[in-house]
Image (tube, rainbow, N blue to C red):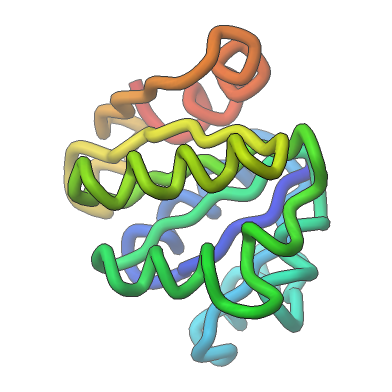
Length: 155
Protein backbone atom coordinates (compact mmCIF):
# COMPACT_ATOMS: atom_id res chain seq x y z
CA UNK A 1 0.00 0.00 0.00
CA UNK A 2 1.13 3.55 -0.63
CA UNK A 3 1.05 5.79 2.44
CA UNK A 4 2.38 8.97 3.95
CA UNK A 5 4.00 8.90 7.39
CA UNK A 6 4.46 11.96 9.59
CA UNK A 7 6.76 11.88 12.61
CA UNK A 8 9.92 9.82 12.34
CA UNK A 9 11.44 9.99 15.78
CA UNK A 10 12.66 6.73 17.33
CA UNK A 11 9.26 5.03 17.27
CA UNK A 12 8.28 6.38 13.85
CA UNK A 13 11.60 5.24 12.38
CA UNK A 14 11.04 1.69 13.63
CA UNK A 15 7.48 1.69 12.28
CA UNK A 16 8.51 2.96 8.85
CA UNK A 17 11.27 0.36 8.61
CA UNK A 18 8.73 -2.40 9.32
CA UNK A 19 6.41 -0.98 6.65
CA UNK A 20 9.25 -0.81 4.12
CA UNK A 21 10.30 -4.39 4.96
CA UNK A 22 6.72 -5.45 4.22
CA UNK A 23 7.05 -3.80 0.76
CA UNK A 24 4.77 -0.84 1.39
CA UNK A 25 5.49 2.40 -0.50
CA UNK A 26 6.15 4.92 2.27
CA UNK A 27 6.62 8.66 1.91
CA UNK A 28 7.90 10.33 5.08
CA UNK A 29 7.70 13.85 6.43
CA UNK A 30 9.38 15.12 9.56
CA UNK A 31 9.73 18.73 10.63
CA UNK A 32 13.44 17.99 11.25
CA UNK A 33 14.24 16.69 7.77
CA UNK A 34 17.61 15.11 8.62
CA UNK A 35 15.85 12.56 10.87
CA UNK A 36 14.22 11.13 7.74
CA UNK A 37 17.52 10.62 5.86
CA UNK A 38 18.20 7.07 7.14
CA UNK A 39 14.70 6.08 5.98
CA UNK A 40 15.41 7.42 2.49
CA UNK A 41 18.47 5.19 2.43
CA UNK A 42 16.14 2.28 3.32
CA UNK A 43 13.73 3.07 0.46
CA UNK A 44 11.29 5.68 1.80
CA UNK A 45 10.54 8.80 -0.23
CA UNK A 46 11.25 12.07 1.57
CA UNK A 47 8.28 14.45 1.38
CA UNK A 48 8.55 18.20 1.71
CA UNK A 49 5.36 19.12 3.56
CA UNK A 50 2.43 17.92 5.62
CA UNK A 51 0.19 18.45 2.60
CA UNK A 52 2.40 16.25 0.44
CA UNK A 53 2.31 13.52 3.10
CA UNK A 54 -1.49 13.80 3.34
CA UNK A 55 -1.85 13.27 -0.39
CA UNK A 56 0.94 10.73 -0.92
CA UNK A 57 -1.14 7.56 -0.69
CA UNK A 58 -4.31 5.96 0.54
CA UNK A 59 -3.49 6.46 4.22
CA UNK A 60 -1.55 8.96 6.28
CA UNK A 61 0.04 7.74 9.52
CA UNK A 62 1.06 10.06 12.34
CA UNK A 63 3.40 9.13 15.19
CA UNK A 64 3.74 12.30 17.21
CA UNK A 65 5.03 13.03 20.70
CA UNK A 66 2.04 14.69 22.32
CA UNK A 67 -1.41 16.23 21.92
CA UNK A 68 -0.18 19.73 20.93
CA UNK A 69 2.01 18.26 18.17
CA UNK A 70 -0.92 16.19 16.87
CA UNK A 71 -3.29 19.16 16.90
CA UNK A 72 -0.70 21.28 15.09
CA UNK A 73 -0.22 18.68 12.33
CA UNK A 74 -3.97 18.26 11.88
CA UNK A 75 -5.24 21.83 12.20
CA UNK A 76 -2.47 24.12 10.90
CA UNK A 77 -2.70 25.67 7.43
CA UNK A 78 -1.66 22.96 4.98
CA UNK A 79 -2.10 20.29 7.66
CA UNK A 80 -4.00 17.03 7.49
CA UNK A 81 -7.49 18.47 7.84
CA UNK A 82 -6.93 20.83 4.92
CA UNK A 83 -4.94 18.39 2.77
CA UNK A 84 -6.21 14.84 3.31
CA UNK A 85 -8.51 13.94 0.40
CA UNK A 86 -12.18 13.19 0.99
CA UNK A 87 -12.34 9.55 2.07
CA UNK A 88 -8.70 9.70 3.19
CA UNK A 89 -7.70 7.80 6.31
CA UNK A 90 -5.58 9.29 9.08
CA UNK A 91 -4.08 6.61 11.34
CA UNK A 92 -3.04 8.21 14.60
CA UNK A 93 -0.46 5.92 16.22
CA UNK A 94 0.70 8.06 19.12
CA UNK A 95 -0.65 7.87 22.65
CA UNK A 96 -3.02 10.82 22.88
CA UNK A 97 -5.78 11.99 25.20
CA UNK A 98 -9.39 11.08 24.53
CA UNK A 99 -10.54 14.73 24.20
CA UNK A 100 -8.05 15.51 21.41
CA UNK A 101 -8.85 12.24 19.60
CA UNK A 102 -12.59 13.06 19.73
CA UNK A 103 -11.93 16.59 18.48
CA UNK A 104 -9.84 15.33 15.55
CA UNK A 105 -12.28 12.52 14.73
CA UNK A 106 -15.16 15.03 14.51
CA UNK A 107 -13.09 17.46 12.42
CA UNK A 108 -12.11 14.69 9.96
CA UNK A 109 -15.72 13.50 9.74
CA UNK A 110 -16.80 17.04 8.87
CA UNK A 111 -14.46 16.93 5.86
CA UNK A 112 -15.46 13.39 4.79
CA UNK A 113 -12.19 11.97 6.15
CA UNK A 114 -11.69 9.07 8.57
CA UNK A 115 -9.67 8.79 11.77
CA UNK A 116 -8.38 5.42 12.94
CA UNK A 117 -6.87 5.62 16.42
CA UNK A 118 -4.10 3.02 16.64
CA UNK A 119 -1.79 3.70 19.59
CA UNK A 120 1.29 1.53 19.89
CA UNK A 121 2.12 -0.44 22.99
CA UNK A 122 5.84 -1.01 23.33
CA UNK A 123 9.14 0.62 22.70
CA UNK A 124 10.96 1.00 19.37
CA UNK A 125 12.86 -2.23 20.02
CA UNK A 126 9.57 -4.14 20.19
CA UNK A 127 8.34 -2.47 17.00
CA UNK A 128 11.59 -3.46 15.27
CA UNK A 129 11.03 -7.10 16.26
CA UNK A 130 7.35 -7.03 15.25
CA UNK A 131 6.14 -7.75 18.77
CA UNK A 132 4.71 -4.36 19.77
CA UNK A 133 0.96 -4.15 20.23
CA UNK A 134 -1.29 -2.15 17.93
CA UNK A 135 -4.60 -1.20 19.52
CA UNK A 136 -6.67 0.10 16.61
CA UNK A 137 -10.23 1.35 16.50
CA UNK A 138 -12.25 3.00 13.79
CA UNK A 139 -14.90 2.30 11.16
CA UNK A 140 -14.91 -1.34 9.98
CA UNK A 141 -14.14 -0.49 6.34
CA UNK A 142 -11.14 1.65 7.31
CA UNK A 143 -9.92 -1.01 9.75
CA UNK A 144 -10.07 -3.67 7.02
CA UNK A 145 -8.10 -1.47 4.64
CA UNK A 146 -5.45 -0.72 7.27
CA UNK A 147 -5.02 -4.28 8.58
CA UNK A 148 -1.98 -5.02 6.36
CA UNK A 149 -0.24 -1.97 7.81
CA UNK A 150 -0.99 -3.01 11.38
CA UNK A 151 0.23 -6.55 10.61
CA UNK A 152 3.51 -5.17 9.25
CA UNK A 153 4.17 -3.14 12.37
CA UNK A 154 3.08 -5.33 15.26
CA UNK A 155 0.55 -7.72 16.60
